[in-house]
Image (cartoon, rainbow, N blue to C red; front, side):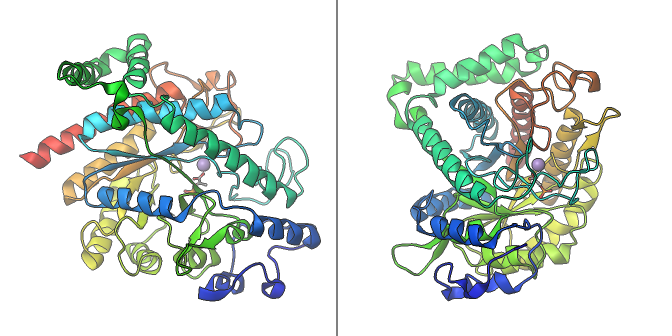
Length: 462
Ligand code: PEP
Ligand code: MN
């Protein structure tokens, strides 16, 4: 059984400490049954073209620098776990559309650009709290890059190549959608209008939707051809995932043209999860050495000291837009746990030296009596509200939200306009891992967050 390859195996250049992580504790790595196959796979992944380019990562970093300065807002969203089967045109289109629908509402609410970052095209590996699944006694599902949710749970390294190929296909499709008119401002707004008209709680959002409608009408009246304007016709869309599988990430880590800077080219932004953010562990070490914009998840056990130490290690030079701290404390605890962290990090490093982003999903997971993992929409919104309250009281920027969502009308989270109950979950419960907001719930979240952003703007200008 192999967790990682022998460092002397020569899986690519080892300068700049890009393989230093091999000597460090690495949590959540699969036990690959066959080292020979793993070695072949890693050789393949070391030679294939990268999925993204360094300059794209740099542009995203400059966009995120605006978020850090309080001049833009970050919207990050997609599946908890992508699957090969669900990597279809329809599935990708639904998620991209949902992100674009949310982005319009947030752009208006914040009066700021919204950085659109899919949790997509690479989200194929999952950390698990237990080696075995309680309900079945099977080894835990670790994401489609590792094992099969519905079949053999033995880790198979060949799945890493499929993860690469599926990521490439998804990225290709996303890139096309960004420029082929799918992102057309008026079209996307029309979908939002249809949502507001049909949602039981739509009247709550009518004011905002009407205001956006009037802004568009005003632009048209001024003679602006919205469909012909690149800024309203095409969008910048980026891809992100959790950098969990170190062999995979290392194989896709490459140098830029100057040969000076290494990038994890499996996605534009990669993040370290709550279970692998050990300050002295392998994940933090590898990501500290790449030049991408990166994220780190911070859960309720995070002390202000640990948050600062992570920031110092991952972004010692305070590169604008480099580091996003993704806060996932739970609705009941964010108001208590977040303020000391923000205060400590900003006091030591300066205001806006990191981006504060709210993940209102992972601290709010519960299990129903019938065994469904779910999240209540009200808890999700309450954590976002708490996050905004904390930043309002500290005078810091609530930089963004990170949500698990899909474009489909699944029944995985309870509540929302259709007031889904525990009993409704069985209807369309399709997630391979955590429960996601469906299209309607995602849009509701966007409208509510837009109201908070508007209120934050009004109170700042007073
Ligand atoms: C996730 O984002 O799906 C996840 C596992 O989150 P966290 O690392 O915050 O628990
Ligand atoms: Mn998740």
